[in-house]
Structures are given as C-alpha cells and as structure tokens.
Length: 457
Image (cartoon, rainbow, N blue to C red; front, side, top):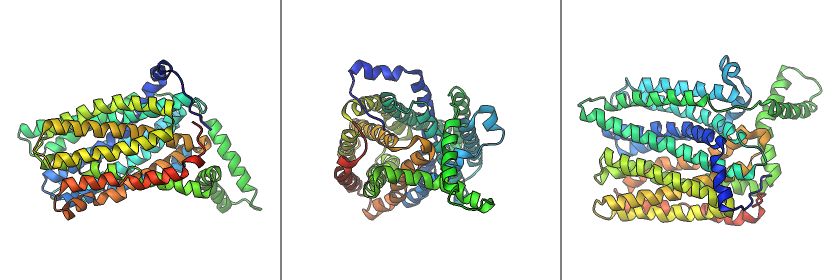
C-alpha cells in the first residue's frame, strides 16, 4: 500500500529534479504523441477534405481500441519480441515494435486520399490506435517500474511528470502538425496533410532513439511471482497436459489481476471504482472531440489554433500539472479528484461564453488556458489515483485495465459528440453546457465510496 505523506514545499519540488523524472517525461511524450495523429490531425484532415461533422465524430470510434488494450496486456507482459527483447529489453522491445508500426502507418497515410478511400484511411487510423494502445501498456508499466514500490512521493511526482510528458507529446506534436499542414498548404500543395504525416514520422524515429536512454530493470522478480501463482493454480489439476497448461497460463495472467483487484477492494467498492473511472472524463472527451471543429467554425485559422490551443495550452498544462502534482502530494489524491471534477465542469462553461460571443482572441485564450488548467489537475490526479490502486505483481495488466476503462467512457460515449452538435442545430453554447453536467455522476459515485477506498493519505 502506498501512502501519500505531507512534506515541505521545497521537499516536494526537489522530487522533480530526480533524473528518473526526465525519463518518465519522455515515456509520457511517447504515449501522448499518437493521439495527435488519430485525434486533431485526422479530424481536421477529414473536415478539410469535405466530410461532415458527424463523420468526423464517428471516425473517432477508433479511439475505442484504448478501452480494450487490457485484453492483450498479459501477452505484452509475458511474450517476448523476437530479437528486440534480447537486444534492448522486454519493455523497450515492445515499444520500438509499436513505434515501427505507427511509422509505417504514417507512410501509408501519406499516399492515401480520404475523399476517394475513406475506409482505408480509417483502417490505417485503427492500426495506429492498436499500436498506440499496445504501446501504452508497456509505457505505463515501464513508467511505474522506474519508481520503487514504496516511494510514495516519487510515485505522485512521477504521475505528474507522466502527464506533463503526455501533454508535451500531444500539444507539441499538434503544433508541428498544424504549422506543417499550413506551411505546405500555403506553398500550394494539394496533399499538404499527406506531407505533414511524413514530418510526423520523423518525430517517431527521434522518440525511439530517446527511448534507448530509459533504463529497464530486470523483470525476473515479477516473472517469479507470476510463476508462483501459476503453480498454485496448477495444483487444481490432477493431470498436466497442453490444454491444462494453457488454462493455467490464461488463468494466472488474466484472471489473477482481476481477482487480486476485487479481493483487495471488495466487490461493491470495486464496482464503484470502475464506474467512477469510466465516467470521470466523459464531459472532457465530448468537448475535446469537437473543440478543433468548433474553433474552425467560429473563424480561427490553423495557425491561431496552433498558437492558442496547442502552444499556449502546452505551457499552461506543464505548469499546472506540476502544481497539480504538488497538490496531490500535500492534500491527497481524493481531494484532488473532487477539485478536478469541479474545475472541468466550470471551465467547459467558458466555451459556451465563447460560442455566444463575437470572435475574440482574448476569450479564446482564456477558455483554452482554464480548460488546460482543469485538464492538468484532472489527469495528474487520475494517474496517481490509478497508480495507487494497482498490485505490482500485475503492473501492466491492472493499470491497462483501469486506464482503458477510463478511455472507454471517453471514446465510446464521446463518439456521438458530432451528432449531438448536429442535433442541437449547431448550438455550441448548449453543447458545452451539457459537457459540464456530464462530470456530476462520477463525483457522486466517488463521494459514496471515498471513505471505503484503501488509499492512505
């Protein structure tokens, strides 16, 4: 059990200077960057190619892959990648393999016209999503394993740095994507998005090189504990054959993490935790899925979006994620979760004001800044919350299970965001009010179970 203890302000900030935090920052960037590809870049590419808001919204269903990556997390935890595992390590081997698949997918996008072959564009986007979701399994496990099991302050700080890294990969990748697309468009290239994907492919290569500087500890202890669980299960069988061994392996790798989670928290509280995780960021996802479309429709250019939503938003996110980490360490993860929920709902209302006002760069900047502040607090608290709940014996599988469940709420429900705007006849103001109300059910659930959660603060 990890306990978050209060410490002085100087002690808290000193944790961020631990060299392990820089490695966690890189891992977060590797995890966040693919969301640029299948998120804002794909959305704007399809929109500028003449496709409808509803089509763009439903194309976002490919994000649902992230909700199910826990299904193959045990394979990532145990199966070794030929050649790569022996050369660069188990975790890094899987990440490099997935980065290679994403790079190949970008090369395919660079030669496809979505107006002529939308199905193939979405299929390649799905391939990127699968590779990214698979990569996240290993990235999250490698990130957690950079910190000792009982280093509570470092764990909370690591959660903050992981979030900073994720948003750095997402925001800075978005800046490069938007500026590159506008640069090639201004030069007169009709295939400016396809050329942009080649530029983004270079970033994938650089990230893979940087990964080689992240240490990977020997995973023999984890394998030993997993084998011990397999032995306990094998005692249930009188005869060991190929079928019984497959059942033992499956039970130990998939059933073990699930049984461990419910045993630790109890059935009812476990359901409450899972429900909260599923619903917490639904409103944020509705807003995020349609935000770039909203910006374009009210008159902002790609350069405006890059400056205010990406560059300015990234700076804000970095600062307030680090402050959010400080808040989590000193005040506790549960208080941080409640504050984050209230902030998310409140800041969504600024977008309603922007929608009902004349085009204003000042109001645009304020809405983006406060939305990123809320997102920063919410994400760092969320990552810390999940990290405190997992069993180190099943790091990859349990974290993937909980994180993917949160993604399920954001992706499956938010896929109807474009249709909701159409149903409201383009009334963006009302749409953003509805997104603000979506956080309430999750906060009610958290309030009900908060005193029974086995997290010491």
